[in-house]
Length: 318
Image (cartoon, rainbow, N blue to C red; front, side):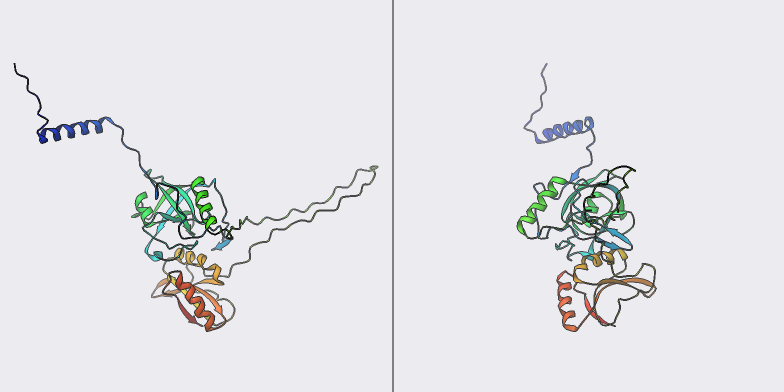
């Protein structure tokens, strides 16, 4: 009896054998777990921005206190932002790229590295925090368009996520940036606390009186300066700062959260506020700075605002 053998020189037979083996391996193995996607395989790059913690700030009556919290873990709602801010400056001076793996957070150091997990589908991605936001109730992080795509919630707009800071990579990033700019050691801002007054208790009767030590001075934390009044979404007008004159209008938005993001970024330039107007039945949120003393100062400030990527910024007068 003659045995029939496979001739491995026949490419079709070899292809069938390999394909069948692959199918058998897939059928017996476990389903792969959702991947963790990272923006870089090596240590994080310092990039072009500056290391920044920032001062306490207020948005719509809520105070935010930026701090170096390397134990941060939080679950909540994530959203994403894209074309409206693409190419414009982030809160730490980088250019926002909606196709990069970055995100905005209200209080974490800029930049920081975080691991974000979509609790609805198990997908996870590593992102660089380089901006401030979001400023909507119960939202804890605002992610780039690319990050939202990889996490699988770009179409639905929001998702339930867990955000956890990567201490080691965040510290590496901080040290890189401070080494480039050693004079820029950040200020760490704590929430204001009230001093507690104390008084000495009277000695029991018959106890010889002792001279009390000189009382130590009580330090009272300085409260943050009040933020200029701005409009409340849903109302058609706002009380402008006292006086009239020249202003810079840095941008106009249909979404109040976008206006608040720009407002927070421009605080270092001076008095910034939001005016809400009704245009053809729709609310428009205009971000303005001023009043300014003269046209020379306005032109100078306008140039700085445009350098942040807001090319539509303009001088307005009232």
